Image 1 (cartoon, helix red, strand yellow):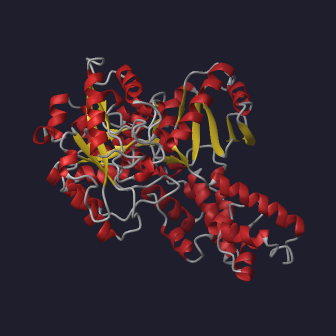
Image 2 (image 1 turned 30 degrees about the vertical axis):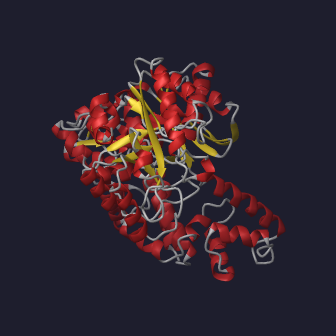
Image 3 (image 1 turned 180 degrees about the vertical axis):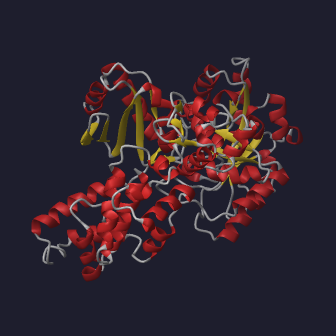
Length: 572
């Protein structure tokens, strides 16, 4: 429970600080809140918090503050009083607050990395309360904590989710299940997976057993009667909850989040005289159950239209749902073609005809090949002569694909000074130009932004993977994205949502910022092989998180309209 975890965290920080008496008071309150047989929101609504043993006036006020605002000023103040990394030490099994305090005070250890280095150098074993064995145990525990804190790409998480779901359908005979949390909301990375399975209390043990027997389970962390937690290979944690049918919708809503969205919904429910939790929406005065089996009925009883998971971030979606004005978000079926793809002419894996056959099977109306230009030498990019040769090959292939218009683009290098690496004559026969930064990532924000803006004024049609990030590998370049979005609106240059899983560039939150400034977009796969053409739906997910509809995305249009957006007429 969130409230209990909050109180435990306060207790641990106070104990690290050496504060007397208070840590135990917060621990007692946390234990009793955790043991409640009813929902904490209902207890608050009925003004019964102080009836909970250990919860006095001061702690009750803090609980109310958190449930109302989603924040607790007292906890934020405490966090500032200890080194930020020290809180991570408390997650290490076998390292309680007192030992963490000793490491902090005596060895100046403030983070997991510093602790790992000290343990590896055998600097801990000779201090009181530690020893050779405890040092070895702590080193192993630190490794486990560090791995559990890793985030996984949405693509990787989906692969695990799909195979695990197939296993449970076969082994437990259950088909009604959903992966909730940040995964369902389409975040570009996820920390772990929250799995809900609909089953009766009688069938729950069968589901739990099937879950823990999954062949990719590396470690069973918890196994109960209605919930279980495992770590999969490699180091992805999955939390399972078995939920009865009458509560499945309420549980989906609660465990999907976000926290901010849920807090806003609970506040709305209280204003209407209801309580909302993971079990049901109920009437406050008599506890009568109103909804819970589906998300639709929960939202409906709150006077709201159903809200897509990708936009449940409390950024105005609840107010629009109350008015019935939610946008119709982009769907994968809206995409009529892919404009950023590669062949073995540059750094792709297969030839153009192979890629075209795969695109035709998707029912695309058009398909753009955009092999690298010569400026990116590592890809064996094309010069003007090779682009003309590729054009002739496209003209020959076109008759074999009567329902698929083949477009020729180029992923052209944006040089350090903002120029494109091929001159106007070399670009003349191309249908469109994808401008991309692949070098000088370390430029300062002003210089990097000026570089990109100059390229956008130079005749490019799409700005590829605008921030150049590689998820978990390379941070985004320093770029004034608001200036870039303003330039996109001015010039008509499309900002790309690159769906490659280790890019997701742009990603949801940034897409929303750019959309609000009037930019338009292209959702592309950046495919270098046939299987990578299937990345497009991941780009659609990031587009949905940015509140995009089909009208915001150029490659949802018929060919004629698309060619106008790409500037085809002026270069023909």
